[in-house]
Every structure is written in structure tokens, then in C-alpha cells.
Length: 100
Image (tube, rainbow, N blue to C red; front, side):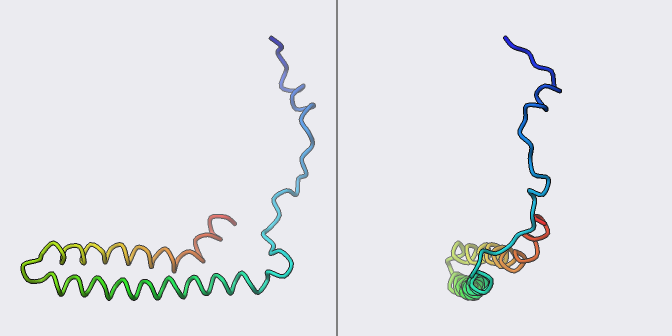
């Protein structure tokens, strides 16, 4: 078994460029396309959230009489819809805060 000193291992390690952690930069030609895609995705997600809230409300109205399980499913669905909408609306602020 060969034992190496730490100083030998550091000397043998390849030199790493100190500027490896560059800020994010968009590829050429994507400066306008990616923000447009993000805007479309956010628009679709908010539309799906509106439809989800409507569906939960209908489930709660229909389940009011003798179908309490359906009403409870509609009420619990509200939490999932609000959670999903929160993630969608906070994504643009949270991701840069974590990454950068």
C-alpha cells in the first residue's frame, strides 16, 4: 500500500482556474427567447391555478349534501392549489436567491 503526504497530493492535483464560478450568461440568441418561455409557463400555471380553484369550489358545492367526502376532497385540494400557485409565483425570486 502506497501512502502519500497531503503536500504530494496537492502538488499532483491539476491547477483549477480560479474564475470557474462565472455569473450565469445566456447562450447567443436566447436573450429574448428564454424570458418569453418563462412568461408563457407562468401564464399557463396561473391559468391552471384559476381552473383548479374553480374545480375545488364546484367539488365543495356538489359534495355539500350526502357526499361529504367529495366536499372534503375539494377543501383539501385548495391547499394543493394554493401551494402550487405559491411555488409558481415565488420561483422567479427564490431561485436566484439560492443560486446567486
